Length: 402
Ligand code: GDP
Image (tube, rainbow, N blue to C red; front, side, top):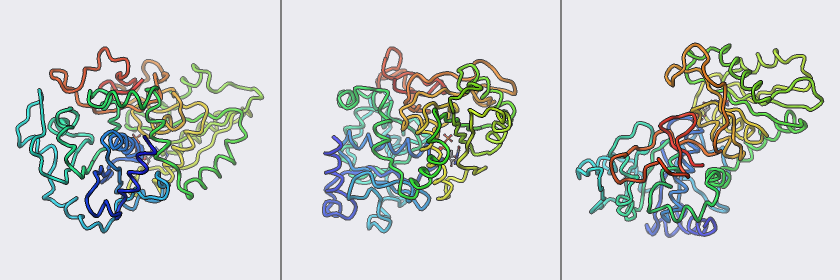
């Protein structure tokens, strides 16, 4: 399938004859919002959707992401041309929006169909905060109608792959493509995301200097989403509880462990280094200290990619619940992480520690945080009873493949 895709991509690539004659169908990943983890998960979902619907995936990154990855298809490009002559038709205010069309046609959720769709350009919003009309994208009847639309302009920050498995129109094909349901993002991600030479240089230098010689590499990804509810001391306590319980950092042995600490802040790294100062068999390392998230900054995103990739090269991973940054690392690395329960008021925590410090993920797959839930109608299949799609460990309403 990938070889077929590559041929199609080459035939239809930007400014090719087929592209200029409008002979191909596309899905354009665009207007990235949110951080790199979210974006990568969403791009991999768009790619799988392109494979399933015979489309070509193009990406419109903007300047903050163009230098991170190599081109996935050899001798071709996936970059959407900036001066494309249909520019206004793609982004102009007159371009139809899928959700609004559904609303206008007054579709109900029981049996939505997309009839008489005349647009060749259509915006599809599958991002966080999308509404019930946008969510009708996930129904089979609508998918039939969308086949006629040459350009789908996708705006999303979600890993929507698990829901594609719940759509009967795609299921047979997906079962043939992925005998191992736990490895879907692993394959998609490793195909799509190869570090650029610049990124590879940074990754290799750090890896060779600090991680390569260790007997075991442990990746510790600390993402604090609510700094009020999660003071450093409390998060550290949770990290240590987890490490102790799961015996991740054994003391005083000749077996050398290198711990890669990935976090926006340098506090955790400094504290841990001090705490384990006398333990010669454990070394702590941090590749970046960005301190604040700046997702529209190219060099900041480069360091995010370097951290994600280095985490994926570890033997053992401890990640933070809710973090797509950690999901990408675990998926690329083929690792089932220990998910830290970080204290967080919004997600059920408080200023004390509760429950388990961490628990092992049921699969290495990322979580689809905001899937549609159409429990009362025919769209998709209910998750209950499915052995392929389950609710996520860290996000109750989320869905993931196992
Ligand atoms: P999520 O918010 O945890 O789901 O992950 P995202 O990747 O979507 O957004 C978080 C963004 O914050 C990242 O893309 C980075 O820009 C930044 N960030 C968060 N944690 C780290 C880290 O450990 N290292 C680096 N370099 N950047 C980080």
